[in-house]
Amino acid sequence: MKRSVKITLISLLVLVAVIFINGCYFVFCHQDKSMAKIQQGEDLNLYECCSIYTMHMAVWMFGWPLSPEAARECFLLHFPREDDDLVRFKASRGFMKSPKLRTAVEYLSDKQSGASVHVAWKASKDYALYSPEHRAAIAVNACDVIKGEVDKTTGDYEIRIRCAMVYPKYSRTEFNLGKFSIWIQEGLFRYLEERGWISRYIAEYYTIIRKQ
Image 1 (tube, rainbow, N blue to C red):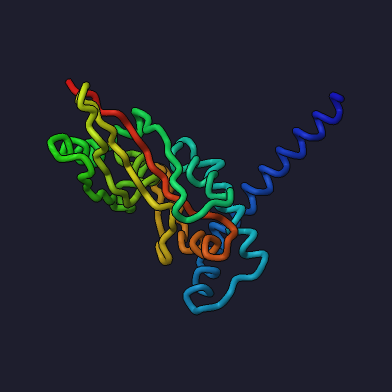
Image 2: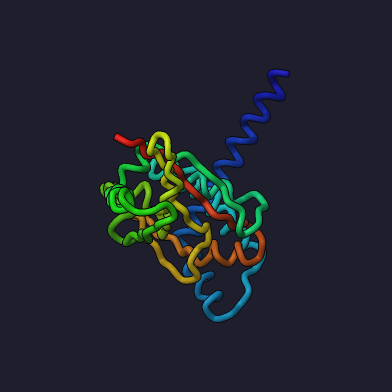
């Protein structure tokens, strides 16, 4: 029994290592070439698709420290869903520390139920590790912040932050991690979405605004 558990654990570690190594190799050596093929209207081969898939797995496996919300979203993209499926998450305090989200929430405070405001971030600036926006920006760029129904008894209402989990067709996104940066061709993930390797859905974060 102990031997089988040990073999299983070793196998899992080897799998994680292979995913990480292949994902890193593809990120630094081949993603631009594959993106160029897509832009020229060519299909990618099986190795390229598998490598992009493992690169996407590496994003959610190793992206938790940067943005746990974005990592969880990436993880859920690996399960079959319809494009209009709504997946709800409770917004954490860390997520709601985004200055842009807080400004949007404040703007909606005196608006009618159903009012919304569109929020977008600049990837080159707001995705950086030192930015106070990075956690929300990576997860829900761009999104709609919506005011829910007001409870007539308490005055409380729900704020919903809604974003379609659809990758852009052509976007070379840089992630500034302080001492070094990495870049991702997000169009490669869009290619997998369009061919059913990963799914799409609509992510909705919610938080309750209490009447003071």
